[in-house]
Amino acid sequence: MLRISKFSKRAVLLLSALVLTAGLTIPSVSAAEETTSQVKNVIILIPDGMSVGATTLTRWYQGGAPLALDEMASGLVRTYSADAPIADSAPGGTALATGYKSHTGFVGVLPDENTMPGLGKIADEDKRKPVASVLEAARLAGKSTGIIATSEFMHATPADFTAHYPDRSNYDALSEQQVYADLDVVLGAGYQYLQPDVRKDKEDLIQVLKSRGYDYVTTPEAMRASTNDKLWGLFAPTSLDYEMDRDPTKQPSLAEMTSKAIDVLSRNDNGFFLMVEGSKIDWAAHANDPIGIISDVAAFDDAVAVALNYAKKHQDTAVVSVTDHGNGGITIGNIDTSRNYDKLPLSYFIDPLKKAKLTGEGIAGKLNNKKLFVLAREAFEQKGAKVVWNNEDVNNPIVVVTKGNDTLELPVYKSVAILNGKHIQLDGVVVFNGKKTYVPQSAIDLLP
Image 1: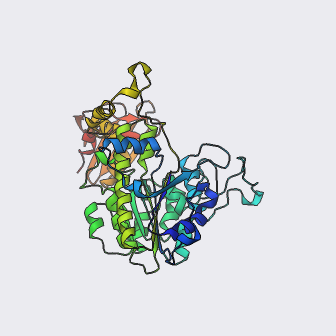
Image 2: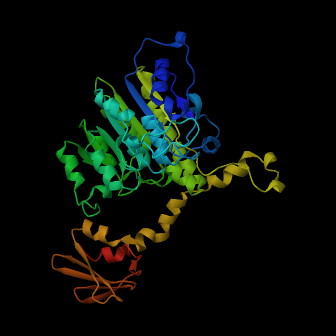
Image 3: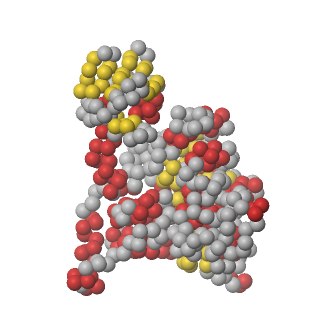
């Protein structure tokens, strides 16, 4: 579903030109409806994976009141890939960002082939060729640019607007491009992928950001306090929590990040381009988690309201909201036809959902995953410790952690720690999954 703010009719014509080849159906505007005002600012908000069923459920969950999305002009979007009728987020976002169809997993590059009806053949020299995004065009035009996501900032959709690589999983390649892309604002999550101990190239991209003049912040308070024209805020090592599970002292809402980004970007007299993604609507849909869907559709709609309120006060601003695909097949009906679901009251469907206090992911977090299974290397290195793997006895490996005068030994698959020769019982076992080692938080706490 595509929605465009009504505040600037000329914006519809501008955006039609920008996304025509992406397969969008744009509401038509007659010449008489055109205004003489110029579009200076564009805010595109993408509810990743959101279907019409998701908005309907959220609207009923909230008592039936209209969403902020509902006041926008509405149309349709076709999100097929270059070679498949069903698009994943990478080619879906690439189409929105660049106007070109692409292949599953490809970020900001052309596909190897176009096999879907109506698409022309790809020349050999153009296969996997980077193509410029509308954000990059805005930057070259002297506008400020920014991206916001509730996922890692190098996840498929934000990367589609800011980086180029034929593999969405190559976070090193994507994030490094983004750090050097001269973006003015980046807000979201994924700071672990900037750290040298996680990156294969061992680069410290956080220091690079600081050297390039950014305020690098990791708390909502620091984000709000920043007065810099260049702001990079990451509030979790990987993705942010669902809105229902979010701790507001540790993570800002999508609406708060949108408001801050607009405040920073709007200082540029030439205007700005901002992409805002409600990333985890998609994740909740994949997980068949209705509470997660409701949680983050509502949070996304709050961000839309922020954008619309700005556009109402600044008539040179266009607001577009468009999903890249709809996931999960969510429906409010009951598959048990004997229950006569077409005669059941709304309360039958909504009341059970109202009892939920956490999303599925939030419940998993309460099951002590974070207490029992912590990534050992990351957690210890954050404390300034050195971690090595002692494989002298291949059948009984030991994780050895040193910090200052302390040496901590953690035998794999056992619940015993040895700190400076003293045996200590842990409240969980040390687990190695073939690639990474997980330890209980009590092991981490043994070192200062």
